[in-house]
Image (cartoon, rainbow, N blue to C red; front, side, top):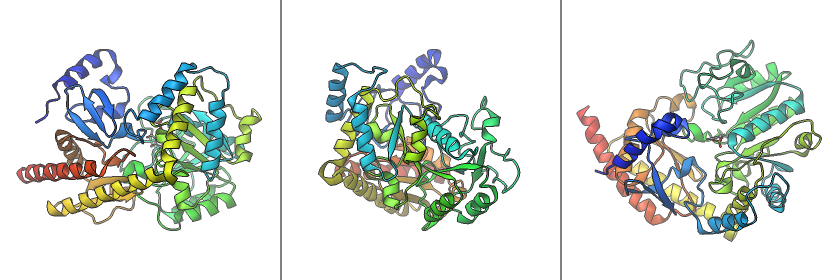
Amino acid sequence: MKSFEVSERKLAESSRYLAGGVASSLRAAMKPTPLFVSSGAGSRVRDVDGNEYIDYLLAYGPLILGHAHPVLTAKVHEAMQQGYTYGLQHDGEIRLARRLTEMWPSADKVALSGSGTEAVMVALRLARAHTGKTKIVRFHGHFHGWSDAIFTSFPSPDMKLAETSGETDEVRPGTSGQSRSSLQEVILLPWNDPEALENVLRARHAEIAAVITEPVMCNNGCIAPKPGYFERMRELTAELGIVLIFDEVITGFRFGPGGAQERLGIVPDLTTMGKAMAGGIALSAVVGKLEIMNLIDRGTVNHLGTLNGNCIATAAALATIEELTLDDGAAFREMEQNAIRLADGLRILLRKHGLRGVVNRTGPVFHLMFIERDEVTTFEEFAERDAGMYAKFAELMLNEGVLVRPSGLWYLSSVHTEEDVTLTLASADRALSVLTAINRKD
Ligand SMILES: Cc1ncc(COP(=O)(O)O)c(C=O)c1O
């Protein structure tokens, strides 16, 4: 058994000074204890107890080139020699913005921020200013950051559906202290349900500024859109004067150089991106159509942020994009191949151990869940999974030297190898044996 004693001690120390003992509430959920890290290199991360893990948490998504990638590190060092941030303009911003407009189908212009949450805030503001309307349609099980404007009870399976008429006061805040009035602008709908979408958009289009959606429901079950769903969403929003926002904070720079929208063949009006964009350095962006983005040029919409477009972040993003697009995007193909190997291997292991479960994979991301179903295609179905059993599995995997997110979502990086996959599947085999033994005792 691995020891986590030093991490436990550090959590006690940290809790004396840091609210919650961790820097983001989600991180407190890790069992047996939130890990404290001493270093990371490539696909591996090492904790303060000296345990090493193959890392599929990847800092909740950003580490698409793995830890301490030599090219990214060198480019960031090089940029730092010239100063970190100026509060003035520099070439890195132009080069990055130009590159994004070349890569992303929906990008005529770019606005840079620091986090996915901020990018979503800018996108919602642009949509409202462009349409002169205020309501935002969002979907059960999607996550768009933690601002008061959009953070709803998450991922609560008992959220009630919005009515097609009347106020949506059943949209519950995600946390104490959150403004309830902001959420009165939010209409919450089931995802992957074209009829529910069409009914609400037709009935309420005069007040709806935007529909915001993850292109694949990565945050809860890695659920893919049904065939035709986004085509219908695109037609309806275009017809009814509603801005379509793709939140590609996860899928961007992970599903390919042009994100999920390129794979799906859908061009939204606005796109938010972050996480993997700068390989682990804080950076996000909104990109979109000229007529909407020009609201910032004209000063109609304020886009603010002290550290926006700083040279460390732009250098990191340019280096990450360059690495990912080398050899005609070989990194994307390899990540996907490894995800397929892992997902297929895990399905075989579930059968071997007589466990009911689903591995939902789209591109290089997948979600493993224990559930009494053969497939999971909606958030409501996903809510039936045994989250406690998965958290136990994640803990057993930690003991095996594999770091996975306690929720079930797995990320791959460009530096994970076939050997990593083989070792991981052997670890999962042992962890599932222990899990079945525990289940039998219960
Ligand atoms: C789809 C999506 N949008 C927005 C965000 C918020 O990004 P950040 O945590 O960088 O603020 C997240 C974070 O997980 C996300 O998954």
